[in-house]
Image 1 (spheres, rainbow, N blue to C red):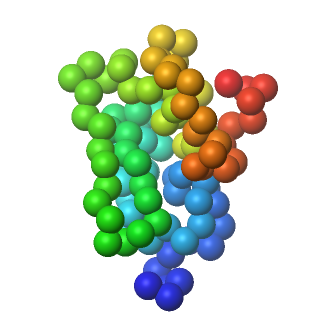
Image 2 (image 1 turned 90 degrees about the horizontal axis):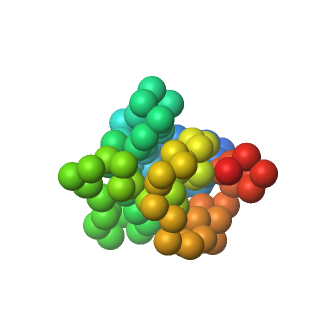
Length: 103
């Protein structure tokens, strides 16, 4: 990709990453960032990897309330109190996001 068509500044709508292709960022906006702000819950969280040839893993829950707390802070969205927390360290993969004090 050579850095063409990618973001150069981390944002809540790029999972706190730089180098995210603009095509990929629309998934973050439509499935996580916007629903988190409008409804307080993520619609379909996904695991984004920086390898453009790798598949994206989407999580489609029958009950949206089961979206893991892990997926919320990287988009600047507070996890709902009932969001399942499996002790995953979202900051290891997604530096930035909400400070611990706000979670």
